[in-house]
Length: 204
Ligand code: ADP
Image (cartoon, rainbow, N blue to C red; front, top):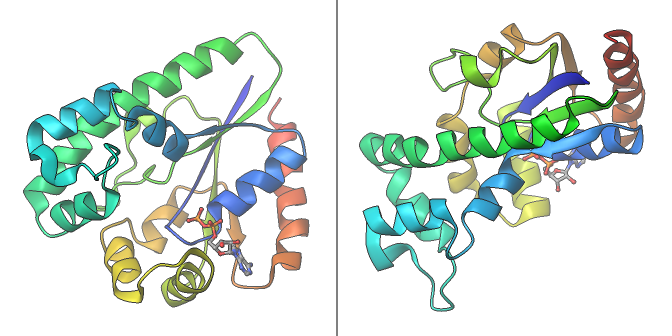
């Protein structure tokens, strides 16, 4: 197994690049998808969050009200820390068990980890030490905002707030082995992903 980290700010194009790596043969382990699974009603992270914030974060249909959670945690540093303390260890554990399943294979496993680098710029050591290399998808913040608004229905200020709460571009690029520049159109990603895939294979 070869283990590669893939990271980038929200709206950078990380999921797009992840899909393109899967087309080339990568096995994807997606931290956001794992978070969503752990936040299904009845799942452990959902229960821990409801224990802390109560029914204010539960929608009428019983699912997690993500907008309500965002309003709470992005307005207050202590609440942001609290959600991180609930979510991160659980995600780490779930990722570890998927990793164990692939250990004996020759798969090239790509870990899509949005928060591989913390907002203060430090890499998160335990999510990082097993990786043989890191790919960072990089884009100017305003272009990320524009894409989040146009393609994913975000409110521009909400998108800017989320980006401001994440690591800076410089901090992410500082830990990168390969930087994919996503400031061009989708066609310009192909050759860069080809090069990244070749690099990943060379780690075997
Ligand atoms: P992330 O996973 O980093 O949050 P996404 O891959 O979801 O970002 O990209 C954000 C949005 O921008 C998506 O709708 C995606 O299709 C679009 N997108 C990504 N890269 C480009 C690009 N180079 N040109 C145009 N749209 C793009």
